[in-house]
Image (cartoon, rainbow, N blue to C red; front, side, top):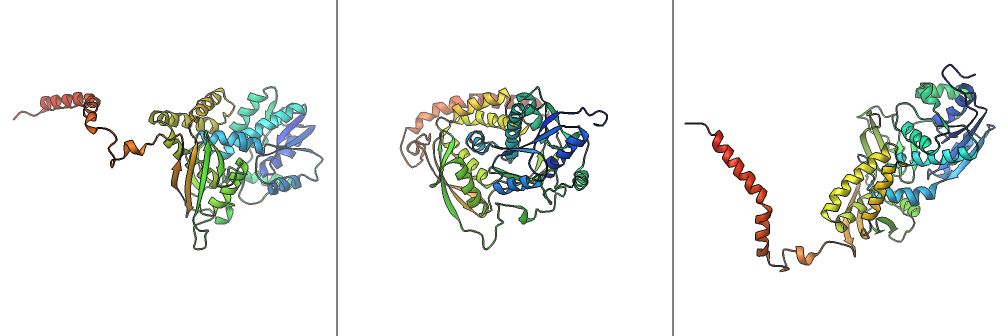
Amino acid sequence: MPKDGITPVNRVALAYSGGLDSTVCIKLLEREYAAKEVILIMVDVGQGEASLAEARERVAGLPLQLITVDARREFTDEWIPRAVAANGSYGGYPLSSSMTRQLIAARVAEVAREQGCDAVAEGSTGKGNDQFRFHNTFTLLAPELRVVTPIRDLNLSRAGERRLAQEFGLTYKEGISDDKTCWGRAIGSGEIEDLEQDIDVNEYEWWHPVSADAAGPVRVTVEFREGRPVRVDDVKGMNEMIGMLNEVAGRRSIGRIDVVEDGIMGLKSREVYEAPAASVLLTAHRDLERLCLTKRELAFKAQVDTAWADLVYHGHWHHPLKAQLDAFIAESQRHVSGEITIDLHCGNAVIAGRRSDQSLFDPTVRSVERDSFDQSDMSAVVETYAFESVFLGGRNRRQAVIQAPEI
């Protein structure tokens, strides 16, 4: 029977990843919530077959239904291009887990409805960001379903979860936790308490430290069409381009992100990520925008991009304002087409070349070496432009006279 204050559930769909949190939730739903049936929903967002296989193995002996949803192409072909167009970054973090948590929640809610569930469950703690991302998505897309969060409801610490896993006879991945997608990998979110201790290099999968035997410099060319990456050298397809850049850029020490992050609750945490492909593609896209958009477009879009990243980070991918910002961003990208060439080496992604038929750069006009127009024509323009400064200067001069001390 459920404990006091806990309402039982009948048929519940659990967002399952194979990690400690979601694995412990399986038994907690049965023991604490009297769930008659727990359906495991595992959403593939590009975490890799090895991770998926490990997750399946952990529940192979349990009499449970496990449903795997393939959302890789939806993530790479729909979600990531929008993030690139919006220069999606929250304090240097390329919004990988922020997006996938909401994609996972959407697919879990969809399957829960199909399976006739009365509840959805997920393994977030009460200290992190994911509880908001899951809850926002569940309640928006499936408001009739009850949302159950065993780890938070029962106030469990990570140590308490480990004890329960042993008690239940469950296996889980030992060591520092991670969250991997093709767009980025979070390492030990919420677990890294020491701000001075560096992360062991063995914890990284793509990123390699700069060393004497590191891979040599390499030059890549990224082609964009209306703000969307369409080719990196000879590689096409978002999934393929991202995979190639994670390997090539990661081996050249690009994509390591170590930041003190302000979470949704206002709590600061040290967050470590690796995102080589995202780092390269976002760098290239920002540079191409500066070539193809006007000064005013860039200034206004920077505000939109910040609002977009803030919404996504805080769990509002499906909010109507997010869709409205998407519409503006898509319109802004109509002329963001061209090629950016980047040199990758020793942790640096340096722009080496730019080419675009939509470029607003005209060397024949801007060059100080050429006679493109009569510069004396600018005298009247500059005088008019300085009207405000003339009046401000006059006021300052009068104020100085008034405040001058008597001799």
